[in-house]
Amino acid sequence: MLPELHKLISLQEVDLEIRGLLHIQHELPQTMRELEAQLAELLASAAEKQQELEETKKQHRQLEQEMAMLDEGITRSRQRLMEIKDNIEYKAMLKEIAFKEDRKDQKETEILEIIEQVEALTTELAALQEEIDTRQAHLKKLRAEVEAELAEQEAKITVLQTQRLEIQQNIPTSLLKRYDFIREKRQGIAVAEVRQGVCQACHMNLPPQKFIELQMDLELMTCPHCQRIIYFVPQEENSSANPAEAA
Ligand SMILES: [Zn+2]
Image (cartoon, rainbow, N blue to C red):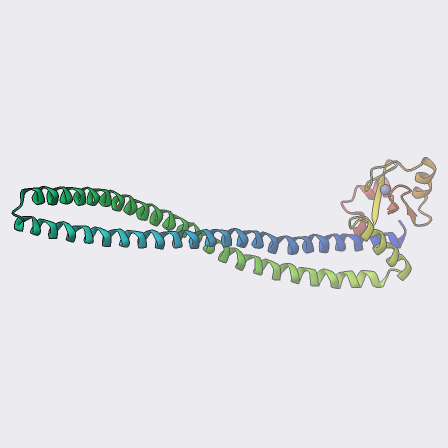
């Protein structure tokens, strides 16, 4: 195989590894951001529920005050009842007391309902808070993991970039430019193996004459379908695990 090809294959291996790491670097914070957005939503609905709870408690206090006033009114009416001598007036007062007692009953029912509402809201809020706490703890742990992982990826990328510089030093500039150009247009794969006449990158057949020329290994050739630089590994070389290592 042409020596430049071996170098390009090695370069591509390093580039693909860098590309994979950069992808992870991009994906990790993305996941974090999604989780943070979910948490923000939960916090907003907890704040809303908290406000609802405060308002319900305020209504409860208001009802209790109204109840106390009704109680006071009933007590006063009962006291006056004892001072009344006139029969008609007495009956009217009894009626008034009965009316106030009715209103008191209604008020009691309202108070019981509002107490139930306060309890339900308190329970909901506690559950929500528990969910928030769990998620916050998870996010904190994840954030630390992501930061550690990002630092690790960064270190790996630095090593790989050094390797890349070493490899590319031995590749002619024009060829390197061509490689980088194809790599950008073709999802990171600029060099492709051809097996049994088929380009392994685009899976199209090479014209038979072109495949014969490729096996003669005289000059750099490109796939007529995907324009990638192509190479052929003879049978004996192909049995070794990695053609690039044979360089
Ligand atoms: Zn191709």
